[in-house]
Length: 354
Image (cartoon, rainbow, N blue to C red):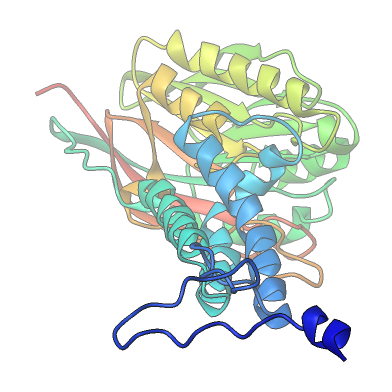
């Protein structure tokens, strides 16, 4: 009996009033500092937010750094304003996940997308000098000649003085030059089949025909408008599809080189296969001291492609660029049946020296 009692530890004495019992090794520790563990639905929301924000962050960053980068960033730059949708949804999911750092990152990404889309606002250009001539210009890609008849109808109705036509094959050129032999008797062309053929039709006399070396035809000439020599250049570089981004940059670079060598008024128009969010396109503007006629009227986000198919047009890649010798009165966008591009119509005033 004495042995059994000896094996039982004696009870601890009761603590005195006000005394604090020391914690033993089995006492639980206070919870660690930091964010609480994510619940499954919060974890899913956080992952989804991160995925939605990744693309807009890279694309907006490329725009702000003034680079087109490479595939797939180059292609997604065409969607830059629309990337506010996934960025906004990412912000909502980040807030639902209750993660402050992720929510702050989402706010930054959404702000970057909005900030990088600001060039859609009109550029303030004050035309100088007295008006010498009013010039109406149409730039249209007729998609392998399929939109030729529709374009001819637009020309009859709108009566432009200059028409820049991309993807105008031999049959297209024959149709247009024959139908408008009286109204637009002068032209500069690259005669070829398929997408290579292109033509510039003019009611003004043309001289100094030239062509930018490229995969698809890019003819140019000098027009005599109200006694003023005006450089005309059709632009149609290869599209920046995967595997052709370097070629697209080179051909747009050649357009920029031609624009930089101008010595007087200039018009550069056509299917640039580039939006205002592409650095290669902005280099054309900078090199030639040109402005986008659509941007001058606040319409630089009006989409022109793709004009046929299951998706509505979502990007403007067809442009009329002008030197500061021109005042822009109006810009409209016209459907061309048979083509996947909308045409751009610009009403301009050529102005003389002050």
